[in-house]
Image (cartoon, rainbow, N blue to C red; front, side):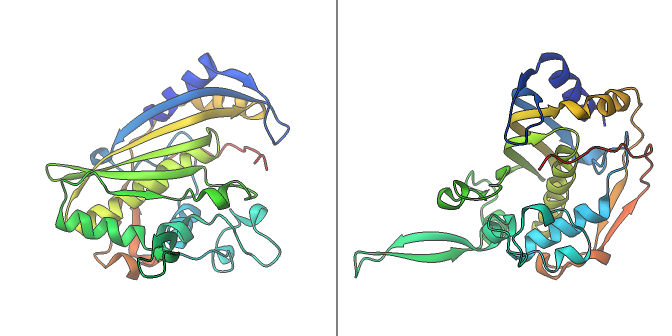
Length: 270
């Protein structure tokens, strides 16, 4: 997909060297942004193989609202490095998407009561009732958790917007690993956009993505340069069974026509 290759080229060309917590230097660029037209196909990279199954299991795990990786671990070990010995993940995205702890003032006691907010359900309700609203926002950033977590949320907030009969999504990400993370983030949130658009009666529009610190680890440079030499292939299509969002299972998704180049091995910086 050319939008991704253009992002790689910009960061390699204009980025600056930075040290970080992993001990592996990065080439970093500030506030990179791109967007893709979802009507042209499902944006799974074709210039290298992306593990669609792992990405799909991860998104369904987010939507489950779970804050442990016991069920996810049966299918992919994506989050193993950041979970504790019992499989608990203190900054699980789904926990905040579906059960965000919100403090509300109790007028009778003068104290704050903590209630859990299902942000995904609220967005779906608003899309159906008032699609012109500009308040369809979901956040995974809870300050008390974020400043003590082993890995606070990277893709921390997203918003939906309706133009005509099309619904689009904009994701803001504080930190983005261009080689490994961004292809997954792009596919995952495009998938989520298609799921919610179908649930609410809209066509998928655009996926737009802002990355505050867009970076390439120095040991990923050669692999990305090899990828830049590859010509993108036509995008696949994704069909989703027409079921309520909370009833969707892995077998309800059908990726059609995915042709890609061979994988490129990138080491994960933990």
